[in-house]
Length: 136
Figure 1 (tube, rainbow, N blue to C red):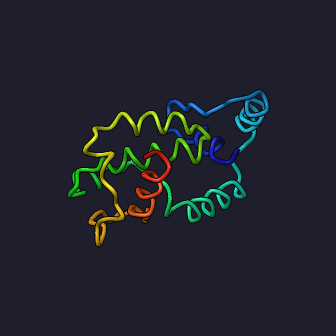
Figure 2: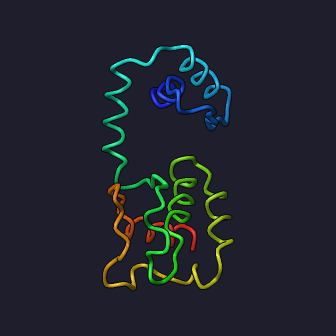
């Protein structure tokens, strides 16, 4: 709820498309839109950001073209997010399997060290290994 309330108060955001798969989620989202953003929401979001920092890509694009084996890092992290965060494994796997074969055959565990260092603290190598294990 706190994230949706933050978006609703942010004048730089014109549209939000929250995922809803049932009526309970719709009820929660409507309640959030009708509630004011409070200090407790800000604290909750700050704590959650610290918690998820190593796992979720911010789509800043700093990793594009960095992997010497040609992995589309941000895309693969997004596919993993579909499966792990949104509960949509099929969607993540479908996108992963649509990647070119030379990409899906790469195994990050074969590299001695990952050349991709995320400025936002995402643990790129372990997350890509996770995507490869999950979808490969």
